Image (tube, rainbow, N blue to C red; front, side, top):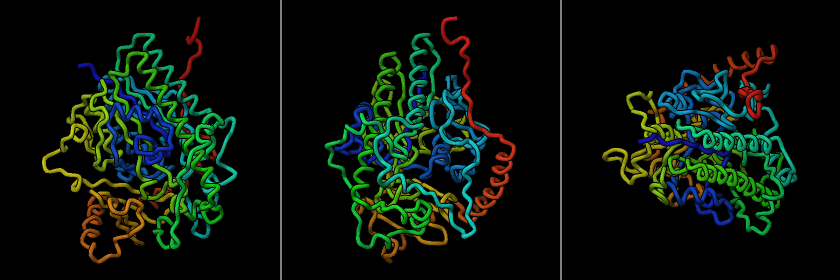
Length: 494
């Protein structure tokens, strides 16, 4: 049997609840809907870390980020960590990436034969999370991008340019494969910056939602009392006290721009699917659409990610199988981005015997409607997420098991939510003595997987070391940013 091609399409900071496959009636996302209609939708998929670089490392490596030292957006991703592209290349695949990978460190390939673009963000340790003399993270947070007059229409931005280049190079590759009748299977990641803030969109996409009835956040009178230590740290760093994130008109413009950015990405996904179909490759290609994390978008008066609420930590995960097998299948069980690697390796026929230790599990059994192993039920498989160092002052963890989500901020506080009865996560059950046993049980799951004290010590040492590296590289002008391989001397008529 011919090995299937594998195409991963990523967008940055996608809230699944605001897309049509996950039930939103405002979103104009026909390509995402097509993928869901022809594929498998995982209804409760979680990021391994609600932050770009650690999440992406976890996806390609199948391991929780802290196990690889990937704490924040300036942590070096180890070059000796086996990743998706290593496995696929060894299995005979042509491996390449176009767009945002957010790999930090001198290895900008991690097994890919090549990248078709540079990255949109620095590959160095420029953003190492240091504190000022008052023990606070430096000001300049993201809240300014969420309020008027920032969200709205722009003719052109560097991020539009980046995503256009990302798409052009990916489509060019697929069309050239067809033109040259390439037979080698490919494994490719196409990764877009949108709908990540700042929320600047072209008029064409803004106009799609001129008459839309935007769902807006609602705030209880005691909102500040619902914040955990993690929430307060993020709000402080993002400067939500400086910018009025709860202003109704700002939130209306924010949601308008965000939906428009989603439609922009959706069109890119549709073009990729159409090109696969026209070139005859679609029916032998596994197509996966996902994101690195979500976005609070003003919910609870919060912005960006860096939180364990559903708007921040949930991601879309939709997978189309060759021949559209398992079309319109929906999987309700909680799953994780660390499950993506073992799933794709199974579909590519990479034997378990040649795999390194993975923290994820293959989702093939769940897609087929069977448990991954005897005795496994949704209530027995925990899904973890973690967050450290960047804009927080202690290791932070989340575990979802069945209907319950437990959040633990080391040395500070904890939360327990019943997502079935309280999907908005407003009622903390951790303070109820009747749930003390469940709290202890879920906390023990976190401590079985992670060592908060050791992580805190490793993180502090890592920051000290990276400051030295950052300053040294700045002084001598070195950098790790990827330079795509190009040779125009043979490209056209010569």
